[in-house]
Image 1: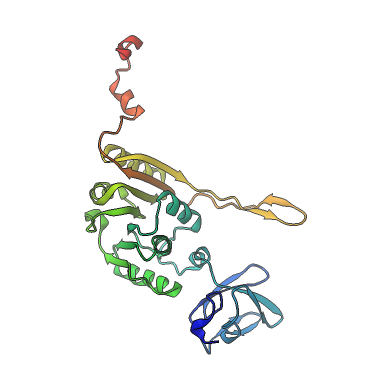
Image 2: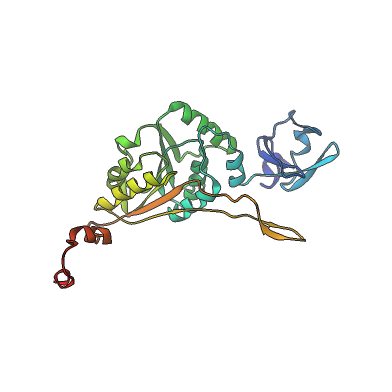
Length: 288
């Protein structure tokens, strides 16, 4: 069968293969003709995998490896890291609560290793566009290498060495997604470029950063419905003899804050009303 006519679930040269051994250890390999995957129990020629279906089991010495085409989450876990990545447990909620839809025009600031970028590109599809701002050229180069290893970089993606704190060039964005340390410096820029109803989303590691961002969003007349949350995952061990939570859960990694661009005129918050009301006023005076 000609290579180009093989089903997508069949391994081709240049494809990524995720090898999993009986102890659950994982290795991510790019398949190439004439190359081999070396393990402590033998050597596996890539030709033994090319042409096989994803989910096949291949023999190496006395062991059998499971060969899979990696999911995006699996690839992100094994990605070559330039900086700390955003993990799949947070990427999923970012896509859902950020409402990254097919055809969306998205600005991402803070390219990092490119993990979130891959998910954004998959979500917006060929009709959408993802633009990234990153401060360092070397970070862009390394992240692009990660993107290319996963597959061809789509034409609707562009990366710029640019400081998002200084402004946003792209007009009429549907979403602004930030992984930068001082996102409050972007609030005004985002308000100017987001379409009505557009979403501002920020990913931050600490409570102090979240508090400062929350104050900036609350003070801006064009942002409303500000929400902050974190995602915790508690895996469970399920076997024939027992069902119990694993000893180590995936705890705090970061806070996700979202806000919507709306018409000015949002109601005062309760704490604002409390600040404006004299503490010594009698109940009937407050009512009047």
